[in-house]
Length: 100
Image (cartoon, rainbow, N blue to C red; front, side, top):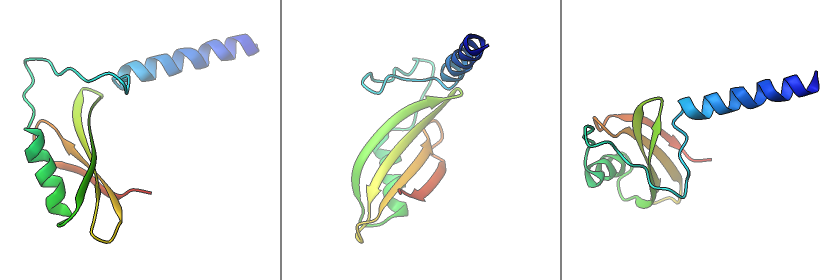
């Protein structure tokens, strides 16, 4: 029974990682030529406009469930870190929350 449970758990984990578009963090994400994303400097400017005077700490382009998401980590003038997620195809802000 334990073996069956382990096999089912492994199958669930494998299928979830595949559907989420799991990407090796050490490998850059390749965007298909048929997909046009907003320029990174525009996405960064949108994120920084939410927190004027902030410093850019890190950026990352991910794919999840067929959607390209550009994640921007910022530190504002008060030293608070923020994580902003933008739709890389439209530039729309998806999340803007304090990083904990």
